[in-house]
Image (cartoon, rainbow, N blue to C red):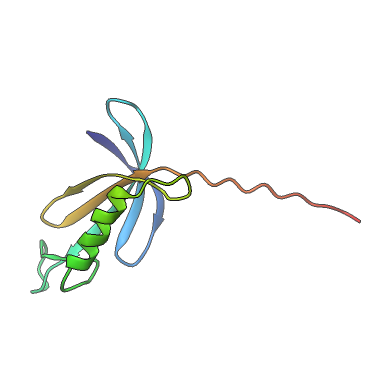
Length: 104
């Protein structure tokens, strides 16, 4: 459904990486947050998210994010999960800074 551009990393943190992705049908650019799951035994493919032993609160927040529709909040469009990763597909926000130098 989405083509993740692995070489186009938009940002990263302690437990996640954000990459550019493109919806295959609509060609819409989005951002996908790739969150590593943490196993309770230390082996790959665990059940915790972002280092949390109980991810129920995290998942509840994701559920709420799906319902939020506001022009000042980035929209959560989709969610996918594998045994070792969670993928959150979000609206892509391109921030452009314009610097104006005023001399007196």
